[in-house]
Amino acid sequence: MALTINDTIMSTARLAPGHQHDWEVSWLPGWLMDRSAAITAMVLADAVGASELYSEHRLWPHIDGWAAELGLTGADAVVRAFEPPEEPGKQEASDAEVGA
Image (cartoon, rainbow, N blue to C red; front, side, top):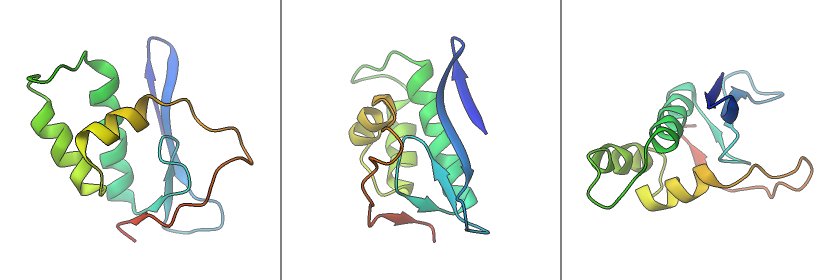
């Protein structure tokens, strides 16, 4: 599954190699999550990438809610979603697992 905005792939989700039910999302490297959390992460990335967010934007309550489902704040999720993906082999293992 890939999220594309203006012909640029912004985020991807896939089954984690070697895991039957765990998913990885590109903007949360090192995290393993269930399918529901992966969908939430992709919806969040879509909302963040498709809008010019300002402090009173109507999407903020939704962004905060989706981010909370992932154990993040809305502001942290926005920053992470816009960071370029890490190069393969340079990902640090995260002890954060969502929905597993």
